[in-house]
Image (cartoon, rainbow, N blue to C red; front, side):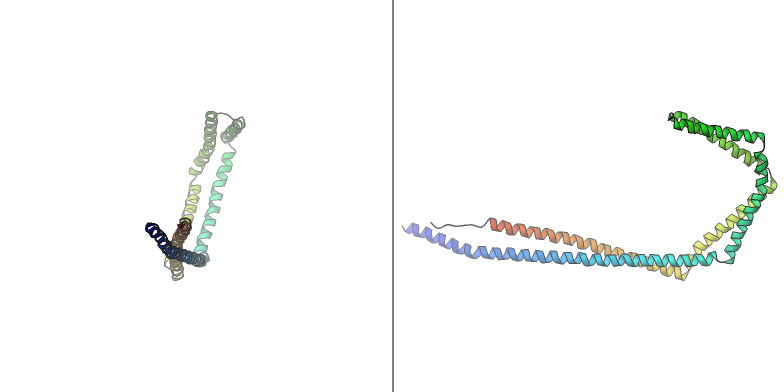
Length: 257
């Protein structure tokens, strides 16, 4: 009898302890869940704010890029409107006209010669054969052979023209003059491209673009880190939910007989 009373008192004492422990555990789980939810909300807000800053940083980069291009265009316009550039361009046009006057009569005469006409007919026949084989879906070997023959025929025409032009002193002088005029314009362009690197307006715009890109890269890293913290906060939130649900499922129910 005494043993039964002791057993009953044990159960009552156990229930009393459970009545104290279970609510405490429940409160702790709820508090943990709330803390995790708060942390997740803060992480979400941090991502949103960082993303906004990144958008603004991108806008600043685009604006700086536009300013740099604007400065380059302004400097290029100054260069192209300079007398030096105008003279160089005029020199190219004159040299091109002189070359045409020297070379055209030579080629016109060549084109009337029987050997040139025969070579031209051969080129046309070769080209037609390539077209015929292509339409007939000929083998790669046949197509390669026909294309090689056609290229050789075209090359023969160019060779004949080159021989005539190379043999004329006046034509060679005009060609050399044109090459020199073109070199002059290329030299001026190269000098301009180098000169703008030291122009204050260009360097200021370039430095602004560099700084904007660096700032954008910094914000992009902040976004990356914020998203990483957001993912961690969500994982903690899911972990907290899992613990709370598990606690509910594992509550001990004691029945007093």
